[in-house]
Image 1 (tube, rainbow, N blue to C red):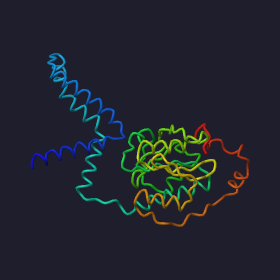
Image 2 (cartoon, one colour):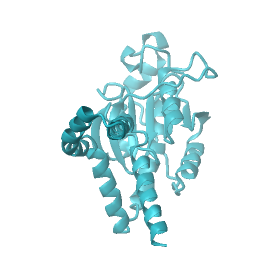
Image 3 (spheres, rainbow, N blue to C red):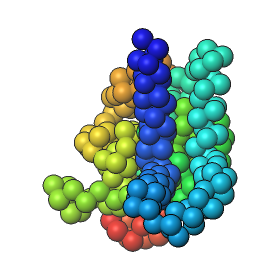
Image 4 (cartoon, one colour):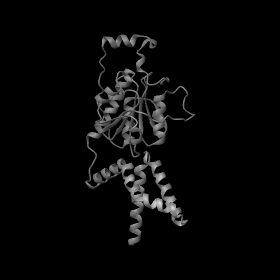
Length: 279
């Protein structure tokens, strides 16, 4: 009975470690570590004296090197363990934070402002977070509106959300290579679909050209959602109640009216997300 418990505990630890490094830069590093361990085993079994001595000499330093290489993963694992031991629960303000995404999407749709918001779920997105500008700021409607303002330096790229925090902005995401997608689909939409093909994240996309709100999940693309449909889908996918709220009434200045009356060819060219057409 003791042996069974021992095996189950070891299997659980290995499983948790693999889930921790999945989807991060540590995964290929782990393959390299496994290759080194295999080389050490072959040296011992094959009685390769010189190689065995070299590996045995370097082994104590390898342990410290692994701690340095995997420090972010270890820190994340200890934080998760601590939260579980303290029986902490997600704050009630988390639902309000996700409702801010719905409100921001409504604003971007009305103003035809391009936006890409990625919501992390079980699979970590640290690899993509590190490609952008770290923020670690509380998720709010005002902050999203500021980030995606066309004149803001961070409006190009994706915002990655972890629970009720904005982890980073201006992040680079993998583009979907799905041949079924329309050839006229822009970079923003392909990036939103691409991240959901590789992870279990949710991507909320607002088209700069049409103002249409779209949702990408598991590589699937849902186009032309209303604000209420977006709220319902997020509530279902995140398995939490996102309460309905009164949508803000847009305030249009005289300058914005004149801007809206201009032909598309003379509008501000700085509002483009990429050299490709965003639809």
